[in-house]
Length: 389
Image (cartoon, rainbow, N blue to C red):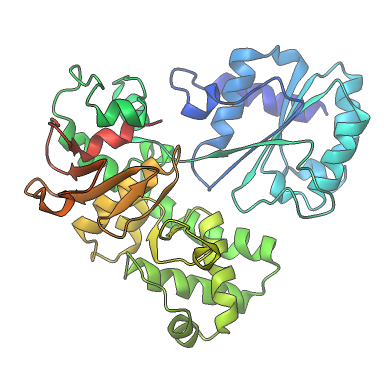
């Protein structure tokens, strides 16, 4: 226990609290059991350490990682009980998916120690309804995404601007007067601004390592796959990456990858839950449309740049950015007439020379243009949609 306390204390000393992620203010930190899940590399660990440092009595809070050697000879329940006996009030468990019986023991801790708050982080493929115990009635789960363009400006360039609602963006009520020359920043963000660790050296190498760990460790572990099946999912991702936006033909994919057609939908869902792709369909009208994926995009533009093997199409990159940023707060689907439908609004995405002809006679429709700074009428700059969170 003393070693864990020392480790936690040392980590907290190193945590910088100048920049805090969007999710921090959306979490109800008063809940007794809080889960924060998300793809590798989006900043979950930093978030929970900042919460301890900013909001808690550090003497009554403990941060541990579930992959610590301590857990080779001790259980989570033993740790929680001893910590409570020490007077502990807040236990933060990082990388909970590294602990085999995590759901069962969290349930027991919740029931045995009503005065202990437990916060845990885990992989985005974590399912609280599966495993040894269903935590869905006890745990409040939050899903964390990568940096918005707004957050990127704050973290990398100390340009701090507020988030705006979709309505404010569409009505051109967002105030960007203090942001000079946004387009060069935007170009860099599309290449390497989605993950906080791009502040460090060798970003592309680190990103590829995260992709490989997700494919080789996270997905196989939660899906109970063998190495051979994991390789087939990697093959599937490589096919998607060089063809986005990818229009899935399940029979053809199954033939290329060498698996049953019935498995493809599951494999795509694993990739989506792991934060590697986004599946999108037409608006759901009636039971026939349920679950029918029409297109597949890589989850964010940084993945697109890293995996597309220098074949990144600028049009696809624009659509990926729009889909990625808007989907955090809104329901988005394909449109039968333009590119995307977001609730009651229709959007056509293009470059600065995009004409309005495609949205003529379409109510609540907008042209979203790249490479422009200011909007006018129903023409909105693409980068504005990076301020929704």
